[in-house]
Image (cartoon, rainbow, N blue to C red; front, side, top):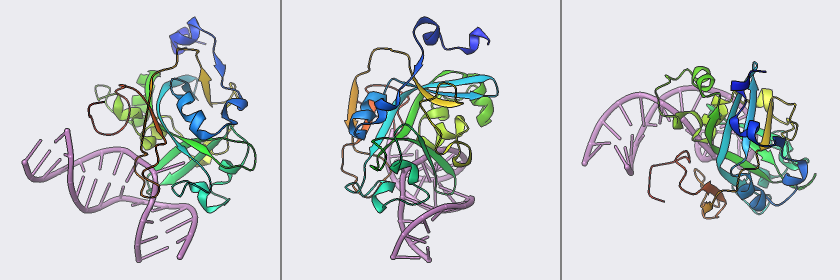
Length: 215
DNA sequence: TTATGGATTAGCT
DNA sequence: GCTAATCCATAAA
């Protein structure tokens, strides 16, 4: 469509959705490999894109913090289905959070998207959020609730959507940029299994959520 | 820069 | 009832 709405990285390099096989692995492998990849939302002919800089892995029965640990329910059923599909849940009465299912049909697991670095459509992102354009960019996509709001992600609209479909209005692409250096930490905002090192962040990236601290 | 409480719904006991 | 894979405004320092 309009060239300016296409990320420069996609003009330079090959654009392609990550294949389903990418997600058909243990979340502890998928998580770090997702860092540096691109989340893409088509929003009324505009393209919103962000580079993934922070994720968390959630496992199955062995992970008390995981929604899947209680077994399959209508709410979490996507986590038990085939890999590469969106699991969107509503939390704290205010916020949606986006996950992608991992592992084969019948085996639960997923990755929570916690932070993005906005790359294209930033003007539209501010407009969609109703935030003044001179505000810190981190307000848009640093935190799972924030990135979902900025990308217009809701359970009603996006739950169970195939994230490997490049023709969809929500999918994950690989621009074949070099893999970033990854740091592993404890997960955030949970009380159960809080000590498990299942959070993956791009080292030194300023869009990672949480307090400004030294890395 | 850190700490605290309110908002507000789904799911579970 | 209570808690939760959160965010925001506000206050204190």
